[in-house]
Image 1 (cartoon, rainbow, N blue to C red):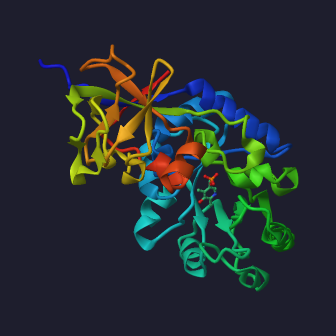
Image 2: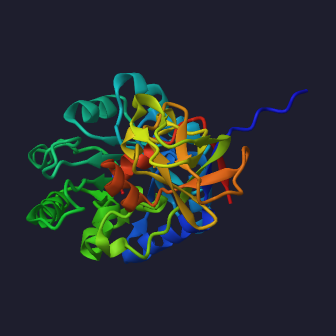
Length: 348
Ligand SMILES: *Cc1c(COP(=O)(O)O)cnc(C)c1O
C-alpha cells in the first residue's frame, strides 16, 4: 500500500484561537446565547472540525446555508441545534422533515410549504430592510406565521460594520415585529452586530467571520485572534540576474541579482491575483515579498534575505485578515472562504 499523498500546502488552524474568539463573542453577547455560522464549510476552515471544537466549548446553536451543508454535519451531537438559513425548496422537504435540522423559513412560499407538510419546529427570517431573504413585517402582521411552531425568529443587519442610522432602525423594526410573534427566541446579530452592543443581541447571536479571525469592526481589534495560517512548500530556489523577469507578463524585473523561491500556492488555492507584487510570506520573522503575478498554482517569493531556505522548506503566507484585505482589495470573507480543496487542514 502506498500512503496517501501529503499536500505541498496546508492551512495551520489554531483551535485555541477559535475557541477564544467564540468566548469573547459570547461575553460580548451579554445574556444572549452565542451560536456559530458554519456555512461555506466553516468559512473554508472545515465545518465539522469547527463544530466539534465549539460544541466542546459550550456552543449549542449552529447555522448553515443549505441542506447539503447540514447533511455533511450529521449526526449532530446531543443537545445541539442546527438551522438551515436558506429554508426549504420543494426538493428539500424530505430531508427537512426528517428532523435532523430546522429550516429558517424565508418567504410566504416556504411558510406555505412547511405548513402544508405539517412540519414541526421551524425558524423564521423576517426582513427588516436588507431586502435579501425574509418575510415582511406586514405579512407577519396579517397572520402569515399563525399555526407555526417558531423556535427562533431571526432578522439580519445590512450595515452592522458601519455606524449608520439603519442599524438602530432595523433593531427597532425587528423588536416591533417580534412583539407579535410567538417565538421561543429572537436573533439579530452577526459578528459585526455583536460589536454594536448587547441591545442588539436579543436571545441568540450568530457570529461567523469573527470566529475565524476576521475583524468586523474596530471594537473587535485586539480581541479576535488569527485562526488560519496558510503555509506552502518551496518547490524550487533559483537565482535571478539583474534585468531578468519573473512570472507571467514579465511584470517583475530584477533591479539587481536576487534569490527567488517558487511556492506551491496560487489563485486556484484562493491566493488571488490581488496579492501580485504586494503579498508577503514569513520565515523566521522576516517578511519576504511576493514578486510579480500570482499564477494558478505557483507564486514567486524574494528570499534574498533568507539564505538558508531550501527546496522542501515551508513558508507561512501573511494572512492577517484585516491587513490582507486592505492590501489585496478583497473582503475578509472572500479571503477566508476562498481557501481551496488542495490545502491539507491541520488543527493544532
Ligand atoms: C453569514 C450569516 C451570519 C454570520 O455573519 P458574519 O458577518 O460572518 O458574522 C449570520 N446570519 C446570517 C443570516 C448569515 O447569512
